[in-house]
Length: 254
Length: 340
Image 1 (cartoon, rainbow over the protein chains, first blue to last red):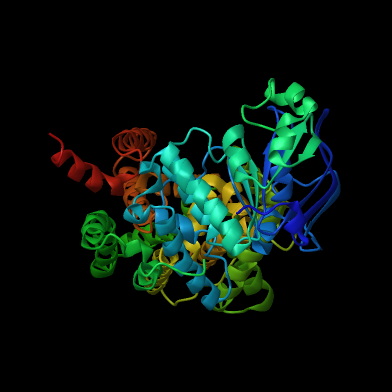
Image 2: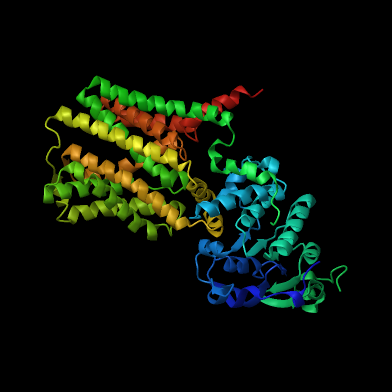
């Protein structure tokens, strides 16, 4: 059963008035949002609306021009990306970015390597095997990543993030161009991780019906700003979302 | 996950030894790749040591120096993928550290070796922290420009003797004894450098370095402290170059800016690693041994212009035949046999 806004706890990630400008382009303007533990927040919006830039800002890949990003109350907006990841923010990319000459297992080691504690490394190493199995790649553990299909690479990328037991996972277009079976695995593991592990997910996708089914809450961006936020069905039925993005009411939406 | 799969604990042991995760097949295949460089190193060492001829020992020592430099370069350039044309900066820092300490304090040149290593490593950190804001071609160009700057700086500083250079007293009594001593010191340095790369490939850092080479931004957002790792790899390579420079100064007994900061040394190191096969511990070993022995023999037999022309042509042929390095030829040949 999906959690709804009423049953959520305190936010794990709080974003307040974050803006980012690239030269003359205002990519993100005064974006504010909360993300709660165990929640899946679906983010939709037309191309160029600032969705990926927002993910880049939240993951530390870009530094905001202004605004605040707090993870469990701790300011992370101006920390380097590796430090943000170390604090518990994981991310996947629009096009899967696996390390192609490494095996599936070695890909899992990349975030493990720099951990100072041998105990932590051992635990993460054990989780790596566990996650490879959970996403159904057990038979491909020692296969070099560039020999995998695009969908399998998406699964590697997802498992590689989950090995770190993140508090928040930012996913950019996880369902784009993948086989329905891969989509099912991703869907199931995202829901299971949110419900069983309490991981918070922010998922950007143009696959709106899939995202509606997956998400607890929806947010639509347009021109770098948050346009509408709320229940998935309500957001999809909102006139300004239809005008700015969907073009027509979503079939089956409220 | 509250309920881990039962397969996890028994398979977790494999995590500690990713390099051997394909078992005997990998060992056999690597054995073919490793055979060539090991034979070359053994041949170089044995040839120099057995003949006892001063000229041959000197050549062998130089070859071993390039093996060490190539392995040191490989740590950043081969594993992490940063093309560095500044090896000679650290050779120069090591050489001048030794020369200055010997002339100013009358220390024994061999006692200055650790300080030369530290000096080169410190300079590499000072270059690396701001320099690693640059990537790809820009980093390569920066290291080239810094080589020119280092040479000019050495030319004008009083402590370095300016363009007149610095002279050092001999470490050993006779030329033959000195040549033999430095041959074995370069052999030791080469062995340590090869071992350092071999060990690196078996540490937990290796995956992170390869990740930097393949997609640095992705590695960074996965939590890999990319700047720290690059600086450490750069500093280790620089320390090796610093020791090589120290030995070079102590053996040559005289150094001056133009010869010490000769860009061709950096270029020769890059060529050796690329031709040998970068990103492996055995590729730089094979590449340095082969290119240096080839260059030396061509120079001895065809002094003048033609040795350079033929050397260049041979390098092109090698690059065409083995674009991923000569140590990959064994794998290619093996692959062909299985083609129908």
